[in-house]
Length: 276
Image 1 (cartoon, rainbow, N blue to C red):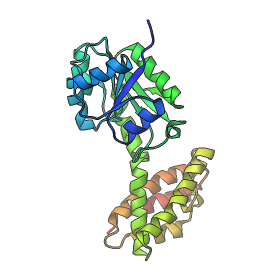
Image 2 (image 1 turned 180 degrees about the horizontal axis):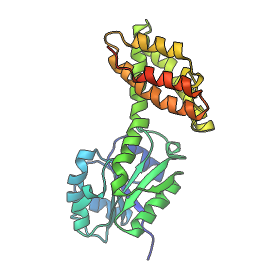
Image 3 (image 1 turned 120 degrees about the vertical axis):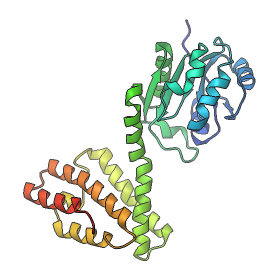
Image 4 (image 1 turned 30 degrees about the vertical axis):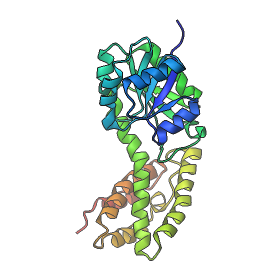
């Protein structure tokens, strides 16, 4: 029996266009009908259809594409990070193998094939042949596949959102503080990007906890006290909460790096203090 192969991508968003370009696959609009997808499969040959669609559109697409004969639609695979295979239930119930393949990467715009290099892919499937096909696809893109069980998906996706979307949100908080200090928004972002990139480069190069730098690693109580004081002013409550939560995580890393226990206790008390 021949191996399963990807046949086309459904969905013309940033991820869909990037993936179709990287795999050299036909790209169809997200609202394509079963007849339109079946016709495209007839032209390109039977295979796996990759759904690069908004989460809210996945169940409807599965119900629509369930009408395609299994001999043409070898598998239906979504690329969403937060959904299990259950969202494709209509297709599975119609006899189609279903799967998921989520790249742990950000796609706010169309990117080159290099965007997949070194990326981890969370994969799962209702059949062994389909999961093997998804693993091969991830490797072909230059990434590394990792099986992700349905029960672990919420925790996985929370981690992904924290590290990806959370980084952008953190930049927005830091930008707002710099704007209060008199910077323009564009100058603030321009200044923050190299700083954040340097931190990520250190994380890539040195790992955890060695990549940590800054006042908490050095145990600088007075500096942290000044920061918390500045963030206690009206309108800065959200930034203060973020500073405290992230500071406690940084403090854990500092302790791993040998921070003096007594100094760590003082810093922890400062970071846990509720602002009046």
